[in-house]
Length: 125
Picture 1 (cartoon, rainbow, N blue to C red):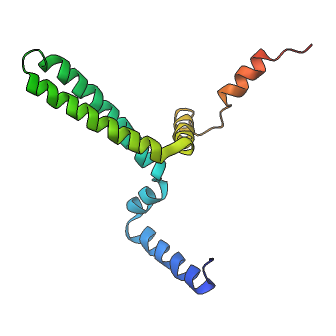
Picture 2 (cartoon, rainbow, N blue to C red; picture 1 turned 120 degrees about the vertical axis):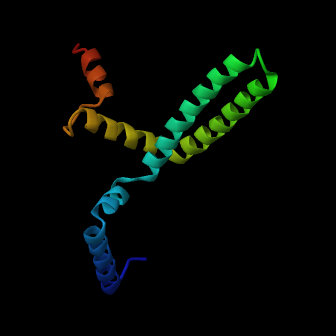
C-alpha cells in the first residue's frame, strides 16, 4: 500500500532532520544493508573458527577439557556462519562482491570475469 502525499512529506522531513542532526549516522544507515551486516558476521565467525581450531590443536594434547572448549567454540562459530550465509543468500554474495569490485577498481565499471572468459574462449568458425 503506497504512502499518501502527506505521509511521504512527513517521511522526507524526518530524513532531512536526521541528515542535519547526525550526518555520519545517516550515511551509515543509508550504506548498511542486511547483506553487508551478515557478510561481516560471516567473516568474523570464520576467523573465530580458525582461531578456535588453532587453540584446539595446541591445547588438546595437554588438556582434553581445553580441547573440548575449542571444539564447542568451533561448532558455535560454524552455526553463526551458516545462519548468516543463509540470510545473505545469493543476492547478498553478489552485493558484497560488487561492492568489493568497485572499491578495488576505484568505483569504475569492471567487466564480469565470466564475460571475459567467454570472450577469450569464443571461436569464430
